[in-house]
Image 1 (tube, rainbow, N blue to C red):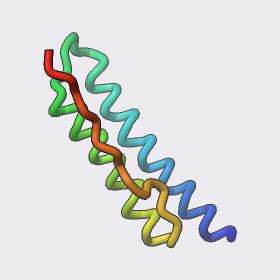
Image 2 (image 1 turned 45 degrees about the vertical axis):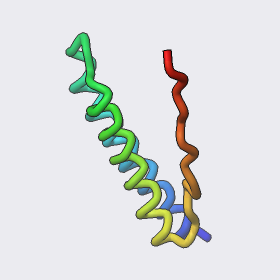
Image 3 (image 1 turned 60 degrees about the vertical axis):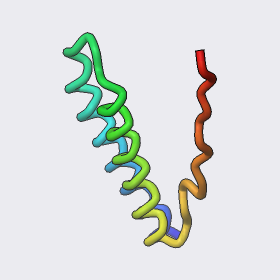
Image 4 (image 1 turned 90 degrees about the vertical axis):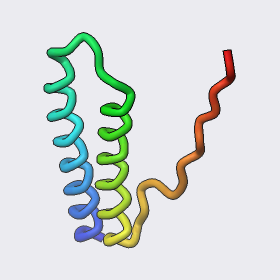
Length: 71
């Protein structure tokens, strides 16, 4: 149980590091493209799901698609 907890904490810490680094870069800009935000979210998702699968406890099981209404 302790090994799994340590693995989960390491994954969370790495994800937080990615988020903090990206936020530091984005804070100095007025506009951030949706592509850059999507890349950041995909990086974080990848970290969480890859490491979690190795720990045999997935953090994210599925992602529900977001639908947008036509204007």
